[in-house]
Image (cartoon, rainbow over all chains, first blue to last red; front, top):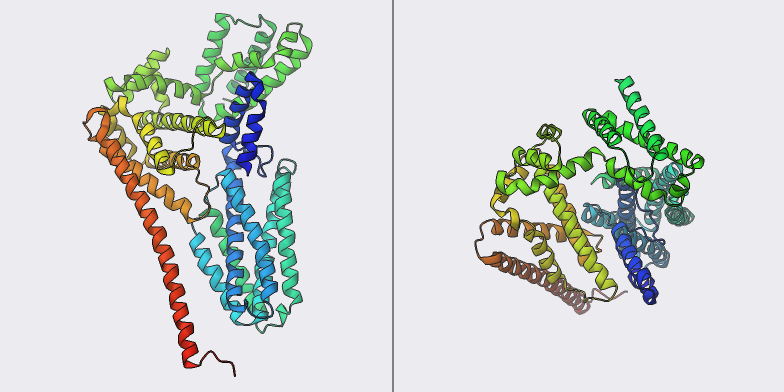
Length: 221
Length: 317
């Protein structure tokens, strides 16, 4: 879709020859720098910023991918129960988040984390095993994971706001929107009796520890 | 040391002011040699000069902008400030740009001296500096080879971007992935043809332990560029497998090219074609295997459900 718009943008000054040459040059520049006006992430000014942005986007992408797999695991067990539609709804929102991050990664030529197969398996196993504990187990897992993710997004928002809020407006908007969605999922989990699971405190902390480790590793690998 | 730095900074400011006030288009030879002298002194001070240059250039630009408000001439520069600054920038180059210039000139002497310090000093002399300025290049021949590689990569990226542009503007047909990869690897390897005799020496230099990180970095950025322009936008494990495959392809073809004596390296391109065909076949086979596996899994599931029905386990009582 972006490429079609891009072609249209490059094509319209066809009747003005010098403008066309300038436009095609602009296209080359655009493509090389990914600095289109409607890109969410601003073109990095130097390699340090590029490194920081890529790290941020990589770990966010890994997080959404993992969350996607967790919900898939939960659906595999509880899909045909009463909580099926609820989990499906939350899963659909995560799918939207993942596709947005896929788009951003492709646009900015960010390398995805090499541990994706690991998160694939681990997420599915986590979702399925907590769902085997029943609806409360699934909800407790949701609460724990969404709390970790919201905390992570909040620290990213803080970091971006501290460095340059104006430069990163669109990216901040995207992250804030996703953070709000994750908080909604967290609250939904609490509403649906997550805390009534025996061993809730233990499970929640174990999952959050795992999430912290996953975030740490995904930033670097 | 600090006094010397302050003197350099003051010297640059004065230079900036004097060149703005003086004739806008030409600079006096004394001014230029003075600048060269400052520049060579600056080259001695490695890191400190870099940070100093940043602050000096920022103070220089602020001084030039303040002086543009005063002078009359500068109404010319005011309307055309970029040309004035550009002219200053042409003479004021960073250490990296100077090194790049010397190394580019040194490439012409590689067929004669091989990839060595002799080639670099010949290049320095060709640019007009003394051959003692090769002291700048702590990595010696490695610097030359890495510079050449990064130059080839930039040329390749330019060519690919231009082709992409033509496709975007509808002036050319998009190529199939296999053809695109073949053309890109061939274009890139053809850049080695002028240096083919000494290329084994260059490859062995690249394999030295202290050069390996840089050469791997250049290789990985080249492979990433080729895949990006081939249209790869994957964000999963395919990102890694595609790049690994292309790296293997490129390295193998490069090695074959080293020992190829056919006219215009015809055998190498045939080898490349065959390997790309292999890769395509492998990809097709993998896809077929995946769909077969899915069909088999569904068949087994169906058989299991049938069995459950037959034995009555599926009934809910």
